[in-house]
Image (cartoon, rainbow, N blue to C red; front, side, top):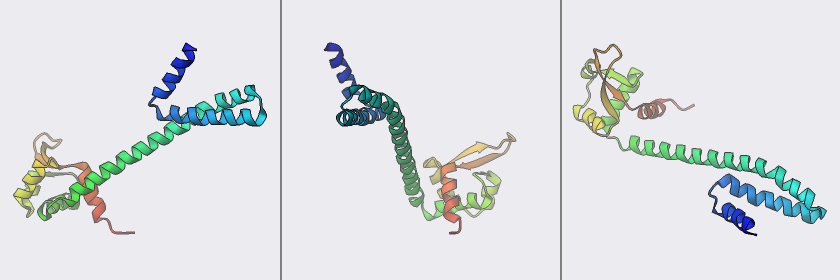
Length: 159
């Protein structure tokens, strides 16, 4: 009886979504099979066969829904960040999009008619930072990749 109590405690204290769903559904399958066939051996095989399949399916479905929710949260945060940019900050981002990449050298930035306060504001928001180009000599500004992709998608024509 003590072993059964430990088993029941483990099942009900479990926070594994797949295991919880599999336990409930396979238990229902086992009970239904027993009531229909009145044979506990067939019911036991029904539980043993269905449990791992249901657990895998439920775990994968749960992981998929969690990943989808996380991705949606990230996209909403990026949308909020992009929509919160000032008009001058959006012009700076647009300059990167027009150039076709996330990095512009200091000389390229200086040739553009961009607000220095907007550039500094993006730096302070950690959406733009300074770096050194791969040649090791040219200093550059690098725009956040997610922000660049968001701005790029905003500029794409509707299909």
